[in-house]
Image (tube, rainbow, N blue to C red; front, side, top):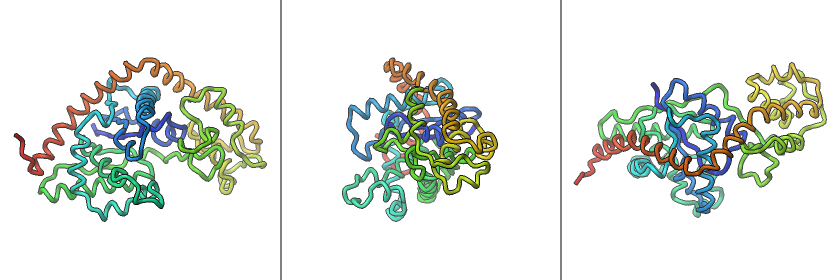
Length: 332
């Protein structure tokens, strides 16, 4: 059975974009795989976090993972900072990775922006920690989106260099898992921008804890254009907001955009927004209700995370200890 690893930052309640782009795939992968899912709080502090907010958002993310259907009795859900093997292996991989490799990482350039000299060193070596997250478990499958492909390639480069430097076949090759097409959900206020938790307008996104009334209002206010829906997908080419709403419906209904347009083409957006709202409420409000229920019992969430960390460490600690032996660390 293939071992899969994936992590998500505790940056607040996930959006519809996070759900359709990644999290629902996490739930689907539980069938036929050994899954290790991590709330990556070490990655989160590569940019400053308010400590109280980080604590709150970490529990929220853990609760959301359970609410979307992750089963912690059959798989592992834990906090990155609770398993020290991540940081231990990350330092070794810092010393294996090359500066030139990191200089090519486009995500650092994007996140650091023009003021790179003031970016944290942690943000710069973020990809090495990501490699450690995966390699500490000898995981061979990682579900990835377009923004993480380069980091996964780097993780394989680091693994291969470690194996070459120490004359071993220790770290396995990591395979990207592409589950169908990657759903890319755009802002409800601007169809050319990705839906994001960092957007200052809450009206730009559907959050997984939004209630039915909030979802209804957000879809009603979602930007559209004056034309009716086309009958063919080609008609969406230069209509980003229309394309986004049709795409959301298609993803939630497990249809293609062409199938959606065969049913709804020619209709105005008023009618289409009504059926889209009904579908969103049907699919998402049970997740919101379950998240709220779980967050009412933080002790239960913490106990689940402690058990997950214990089980994760039982896998990672021996692997990282062997890596330390291969490097030549003296055990006294």
